Image 1 (cartoon, rainbow, N blue to C red):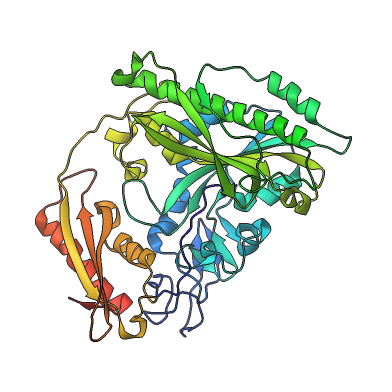
Image 2 (cartoon, helix red, strand yellow):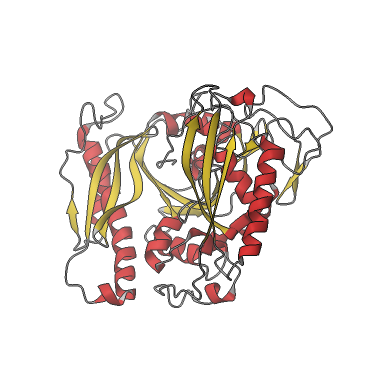
Length: 463
């Protein structure tokens, strides 16, 4: 379930063309002002797809598709997945770990009820293979199909997902999600007793759990009264929360034992449930943990909106679902400070992790200095209102130009000329390789390539 949704606004944008297309350099993000020219098919993971004006998948993303870090032996993403999966054993749960990354717009958006103007549908947020096909933006793209298959009472889906996003130490355009669900068939009547029996079979834990709010609230966290009774949802939510508390308790215990500063701590682990809103569950919650002196949100969850199983042909199935980012959990578990490290092929990184020792703490193998470069530019006249260049397009161009040599990009300023109304943006780019020191000459060359790409592909005027 896409339980950690973004709130980014939809704006028109000009985007860099994929190198797989023989078209004009610029085209409108929403595909309304179409360029002409011959278009080559796009090959993704060995499968050829037709392209059109919506295609915006760059070569760097295509090259990442076969990596599937969540399936690589001894990789920290795979180890994290395996630790979580162990808490949801067969036959009650079935794991789906190798579902194809290219899905239809219907699977990714329509099956989940995304409105036509939802920001997630924008080409500024999503990688389109063509107008009707995308690289999945969440594991929920497969949810309806898995519900329809109905192979087991519960399931887990783990996969690589793709979103155009910011550049910093915790965001990457390819990351990994896990979602899970557990359903009970109410065809024969009320399942409250059955859910309570399943809850009683789960082990206890000794964490301190803060859960001050009632299970439902008429406005903040409503019951789906037309489908569920309060007693049933009390039982389902208790089963959901205990299941996830056990998972997070295991993760935190492993992380604490691996850190010398925490291993001898006598204080109990603390978690808290916070009311939340997600379009696919109600009531809904986020689970936060108290870690390193602050509360950290780790996952979202809730009681499945009944229209989802009903659309999959299971109108009498009631239950819960959750969604989490495997990178976020793995960064906590292994003390990994930068999301780019997961994509490193450097043996100094990969050799630190083994299934036989799933609590290893990452040991930095080098510390390289940062190299900051600023770039300022006037937006092209046709987008003088600022709507024509989306920030994700700038981020995408930085990634295509400098790759993982960039640690972060920060917008420093947005300026409107008081007389002409022209708008200017200024960004600071932090060049820092994870594997070696970049010389100032190398950083200058990368930055000059970026400046030129901004002119050539976005039509800006450098300041």
